[in-house]
Amino acid sequence: MFWESADQAQQRLSRTVVMLGDDPVYIDRVEFSDRKDELVAYVKTTADQPRGEAISLEDPRWNNFRKLPALGLINTPTDLFLIERFPARTVKHGYGRENCGVRVYRRDAGRANLWTASPFNIFSFPLNTELKDWYAMASRKEFPSFEQALEIVSEVENRPIAFSPKHYIVKTSSGLIEMYRSKMLIGFIIDDSLLLQRPARCYREELAEVYNIQNIMEA
Image 1: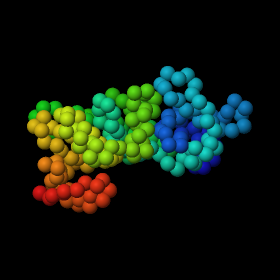
Image 2: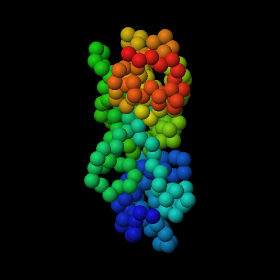
Image 3: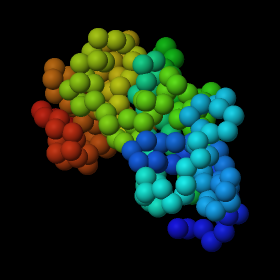
Image 4: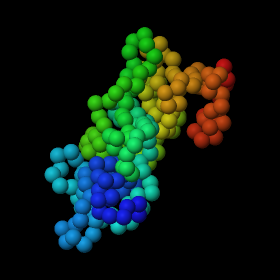
């Protein structure tokens, strides 16, 4: 373990998001159990839960806290979110307000796509009943395939769909389907082919081998 005392465990894990088994969870606080014989994390599943479930820090599902939720894009029925980690001087081991920010995709008419500050913070995702399942899938890097994402966006304008933690596609109001890697426009989908922008040619092998995207052309 990466702590030597109860105070250290509390400082590093309280008010953070970590993985418990295959699911991201919010740790409200760490303290000794009611019997005072072990350290437990109080895990909340909703924001208004008064106390949370006490889970021993020795529980094997924590996997010694080696694994954290994946960062990046999150599909939801209404929005595409982006969780980013930023440099911060903090003792926190998990993700929290001190070291992570949340942005949401917005597109204004006549302007390039925008990632604006979200009304949610990272705690909102494991605590919100409408978001937690979508966040859990993104935390496990479970995304639709490129073909599935393309089928969805082809039907709806300005509805971005991620097919990996870094990649998403969106159909603009002009009918053009754009592909992004993180916040960078890397190409366009034209007649079942991907036209890569010149600065993005280095991603051709990744797109073909990892995401099985065929018919890639270069501008």
